Image (cartoon, rainbow, N blue to C red; front, top):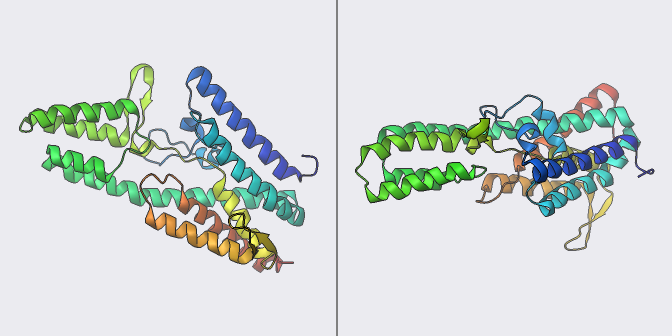
Amino acid sequence: MRMLPPIVKNLIIINVIFAILQHVLYSSFRIDLSDYLGLHYFRSDLFQPWQLVTHMFMHGDPRSIETTILHLGSNMFALWMFGSILENKWGPKRFLWFYMICGLGAALCHLSVLSMEYEQVIHAFKAYLPNATADQFVSFINHHPPRGVDSHVLDRVQNLYNSWVVDPGNPYYAKLSGQVLHEYIYGAAGPQGVHWTGLLDEATVGASGAVFGVLFAFGYLFPNLQLMFIFPPIPIKAKWFVMIYAVFELYSGIRNSAGDNVAHFAHLGGMLFAFLLLRLWHYRFGDTRF
């Protein structure tokens, strides 16, 4: 790693250290570091302001080494490939500011999108309470799949439903369903101070927002440089590569298909803040292109 510029080198080292640490803590003590350092929605009990920064150094899932390696490896490869060129052009201080601002911008964009999504969930929950039925209960769960919900909370959902369908006219189950759905959304207190996560507690991790900012800047500064698509292996100019990637992220974010846990609007947020910062530098310091 001697050939790497200092900021890129240290960012890669820090990210690798955090990846190792999260797996050691989880395998040894069942501590999920993403609960503390991953980015959470501001209405989650797990949200802390420092997560706007620390989420950029967390990757993957402590339960899956393969997932972590894939997530970490793809981000660090892109950071090495494109970030090294930018740092050599701008210098360490300017590159670090750019990287961190893109990551923060990505986080803010992601939280904005989460706000629209989660406020719809909360509104639907409030509408459910005066009209609680077993069918409406199931419909709520189906419309808001249990992404990130703790297994203990899901067990309570399943147990309530199993009892309710046997005795659908029982008002006790209708009343209990409000409490169970509240836990489903906001999480619940488990034994010994453990927090069982709900929908609002899902953590977002990864340097992707900052890395997408780096990718955008590379395409902005070197628009006609030839890159090589891996699949299929065809040459493409950097500006078209970035544009295709941006359109794909926008399409994926709008489509928001089931099972897709990628923060597409965070990626776009990193690109957006990269564009704004590059334009600011253009007006303050002159043209930043070669």
